[in-house]
Image (cartoon, one colour):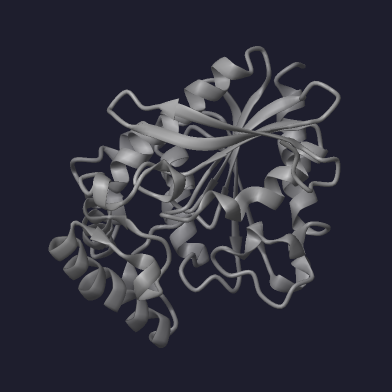
Length: 299
């Protein structure tokens, strides 16, 4: 099956087993002719559908990469949220992310392995999940999601209502959060929402959760990291992005904060990086970083 990418990336739907139970459904995007230079896994944001990453994946394929995109268990094509009500955010980070990373490494042996993590996908990588054998990884809008740090009062109240009232109430009542019906995104397992709600109240987010061992895990990351944020992101302020990446004391972390003007678009926000408007501006910068990092592994 072929998509509508610049060079018609070859697209293959795949199922990836998770040792803890269940299956992840995803897509492998490959160059149509030449063998790939490296493999990149795109780890998604919380309950964000895989389709958001389609055009970005095609852009990477056009640069010679093989790319894997997917949905976390209990979201999108990887199963109904109701049927996975017990899955927590930490389960996505500690089980789903490594499962896809291992599968990709076995699918593309001998190629440099890279990753891009969006929001919680970047959290997983920053906590040393799915990083075995990685040449480096990029994170996009990954931040400590502490509600009280949101600078705009209206957004702070809106997010607080979702994370402290609506989300937990529906999670307890139904076992899942019907995000599509509530107009707050995709459906997600109830346990994931309850854990997210609890972390959002802690000053240090999951670093203040003693069951996460987050500080030690972050300090164990020892690869190259590019952490990207945006000036108009109402959640991922520079200070909250730093809160995730300052603990990576053994990694080589480069921080970039882009403006919408640099991207040539009116707004970017928390999810806008993966929309096509940045195809000719910010996407090439990330693709070039990934390529340089991949090439450095062979020097």
